[in-house]
Structure formats: structure tokens, C-alpha cells
Image 1 (cartoon, rainbow, N blue to C red):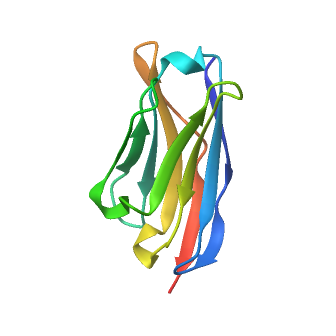
Image 2: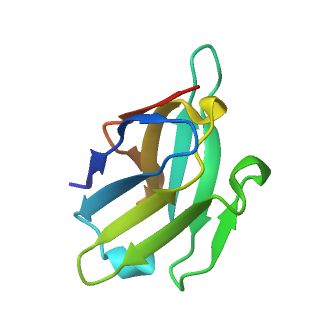
Length: 115
């Protein structure tokens, strides 16, 4: 059984920083690309950042230069460091892995950025 358990998030003022973490179990973590997605109120879920099994990172344009995705293949975790947060970054953030022919999601973590 694949499980993704998230931690972090919360309320922060604009310009502040938060860090999200996601622990994966039930997969050989180092073999899989991981990603973070978010969903703001009234919006569709969007891809924020991905990290390949080899550690190559990609970001959606709106977070480039502010967010950093990372992975720890010993602790089986993927992190998302979010700096210079903006009100538009508010939403529920989800970690994701595509494995065994389907997608698995974390439970979601609320990030609220006050203007």
C-alpha cells in the first residue's frame, strides 16, 4: 500500500516562508519522480513542482525563483521550501507520486498567505 503523509504548512504573512514535507511509504522511493500540486479556492488543481528520481527539478512559472523542491532518498521524503510567499500562493497543497499504474496523493496541507 502506497501512503503519502504530509506535514508543514499553515498561516504566514506575504513575503514569509513555509516548508512542506511529504513522507512516502510502500514504494521504492528513490526510483520515482515526485511532485507537488496545489488547489486554490475555485481553481483546478495545478502542478507546482516536480523532482525526478535523479533530482532534476522543474517548476511552474509563477513559483520559479521562490520555491525549491527537494528529496531525501534516505528518509523517503520530498520537501517544498516556499519563500517570498504571495497571496496567490494560498491553497491546499498535495504531494503526488505516479506508481503502479495510478496516482497517489497526500492528504493535503492548507497554506494561507495573508496580504
